[in-house]
Amino acid sequence: MPLKNKHAEATQLLRASIAHFPTTTLNFDEKVEIFTDGALIVKGNTIQDVGDYLSMHTRYPDAVINDYSGKWILPGLIDSHLHYPQTQSIANYGDQLLSWLENYTFPAEMAFEDEAHAAHIAKVFLNQLLKNGTTTGFVFTTVHASSSQALFRAASDINMAIVAGKVCMDRHCPSNLQDTPALAQRESADLIDEWHNKGRNKYALTPRFAPTSSDAQLAAIGELASQYTDVFIQTHLSENHDEIAWVKSLFPSANGYLDVYDKYNLVRERAVFGHGIHLNQEEWERLGEARATIAFCPTSNLFLGSGLFNMEQARASNVHVALATDVGAGTTFNMFKTYGDAYKVSQLRNAPISPLEGFYLMTQGAAAAHKLDDEIGNLNPGTAADFIVVEPRFDELTALRIDKDALFKDVFFALSILGDDRMIEETWISGQCCYSKKENLDAMA
Ligand SMILES: [Zn+2]
Image (cartoon, rainbow, N blue to C red; front, side, top):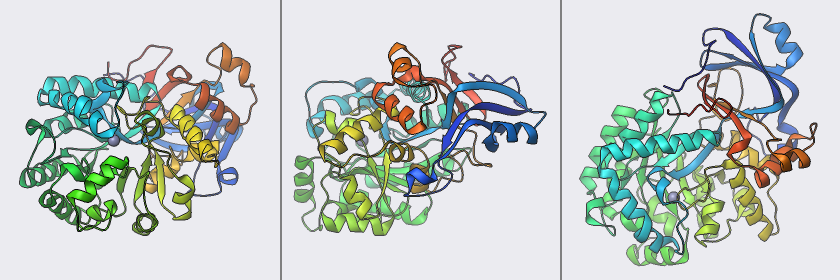
């Protein structure tokens, strides 16, 4: 067990510069809350208070003080779409979506029939999240129910809020990765009963994407979505032109890609669609009306040559957007770098995404889209004590580039371009320090 907290029972005061969005907003400049000399008050597994150091010190005179002056405390980051079985297939050359699946993804996922392998990769995966400051992930597992079990178990060991689900596929993939409509429904329902809202775990119904599920399977998953109205749904949507053409040929009666899911009650609040790069106007409007979310995965979209996400259209259609890595097609576990690539994508579209919006899309904005902002995404009193300690001047170049008294938006932007896991000093989950760079404390050691 990794946990380092000598003062678990005491009230703790963590002094640092602090930034977060306490509320849902589109006015990022005005609504970001910043305490240059701030303090976070943590008691047990929750945040008790946040404010200026002096006022917090006066209000909590007996709190044990941890001094992180010069560093930033931020909410734990949320990665809204990634694949833990692909941890090992990150950074493979040469393919776009459909051949990538065939050549790298499916072979990697077959290995998860072995439960020991799944348990091992789950730990490596969670280590990578924590050392990059991510405290909640929306995670695809594999078709094997045991692969979901392995991830939920590992996350439960550190009381981490994970959202995950068994991948459902009953066609167009290797036969040993196929389930059936009935099996997908039964295993998903069993996993919901066992894990959803148990501890901090949450379940997501997870059809991989329309081409690998028959109508019967999508209908079976849709029945579960109707039955369990607060579970998440996660899948892929309109990532690549060949994929879209394939969906059209497989579902000739549907009115577009999104409609394939809509027909089966899979487009709603808490439905998270990976990518959504090539959507038509009607689909944008439907996503906004349904209050569904798109996971924007810029490093993956560039790596697989999928296209440039249209953030302006998402805003215009009131579609929730959350940033995500999409590892292993994504090229990093680091959400700061992910925003760095989102910025580059938006520059190519002549509509740069501001640093504060980028920060919002991996914290409060993501949490609110997922209806989880009473638990994660901000540093409000009563929420889970999931947060990170960031050292902005972690090497020679960042020390040169980032002034000691730089504004948060400048610090965040520079780190999104220059940063990596070295800037994450500590990652705290549920009031416990689960990763410490200095003490070489591994999340899952
Ligand atoms: Zn994906």
